[in-house]
Length: 519
Image (tube, rainbow, N blue to C red):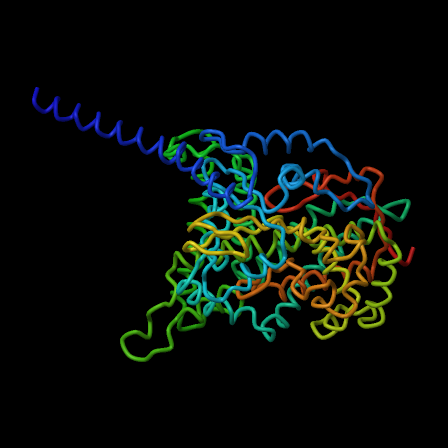
């Protein structure tokens, strides 16, 4: 009886503490934070217990999902960020909204963005990733901070040196060559001499092929399985991103959770086995692909008893593999998709690029030196990234209380940087900010706008994208080889409806009419 009484007392104490926590954490604290921001002139939608603003976001995005745009209309913000547009008009900027019980401050002032992203003192760090997103990309270079970031950067950096990238260009061209051959065979068998191809999925498969071969080399088939597992996890992530995060719910054996656990385990086991095999073959070399270069760089250079110690653990290398595999195919495939879309809509630019490619490369397969001379191609790719950047928002938080401009932020207050809104700021990009105009990059990326750091396609500052040269080389090689062989236009079936599916993608794919140039 005494034991039961003690257990009942402990249970009552636990319940009372949980109730106190819920009142403080989920009711009092958000209202105190909202009051703090109101006192600074920062307003936003009212906090709703536990749900925050997520129901409003879900409703507004659902209402906007049926909006279809003209193909020349590149102002798709009302489709993917209707809540930001409404709150920006209603409250001005910056404004605060709520992700569950957590406040998020949305800023679209370039000077504040520069102070955050260009900061070298580590005052602003990446937000904790949503669990569903973390399962896809791992805690690699994109997410680690401080000394861990220095360690990871030191290991990953050698794999993206320009001499290594030039070697990888041959692999990129080889993969593109296989796709070109398939397309040529299909057009040869067409009575009309032209075919309709859905390029969004073609480019996803192509860039997965490239990253599988450049990253995993001889382990290419396992790399393709990694691609499939990540695509399935991405679908789960998109479906659950705005769901209420109930403590402990992710541990319940629901159908979706069990599917996610199975995919996570499969992904972890495949990558661990590949890495273990490479480490075991140290005497014969780790291989000259990205994985091999990363493992080689991961071993310390010290002599003596530490010579076999690794800078990164196996699990950390697994996370890096997840990161560069997802980033290496997902973002580049969408850059290619939107570039092909824009060149279909603006045939004069398609012809300009074709003439440049034939002038610099002839009809030969391009190499890295030829690709470096494609100035107008670079301009088009940068303009595509400005208008259709695959990454829709960047997130940061201060590690301590900090003053940002006139704004006082508390430790861990989440900051949202909406890239498409900033990339359409007419005060920075001019009156034609919503229009496709590659000529704005004629004198380079730093002179394309009124401030040198306006283009955020690869971010800016010390945490800018380490793979940007890889992505640009890959995109240039793919587009150059398509332009050498084919002309293309949008299919009448195409519906212009950019969608937020973790990355910016065409909701209804990209059907293209392809015609060989010699027909």
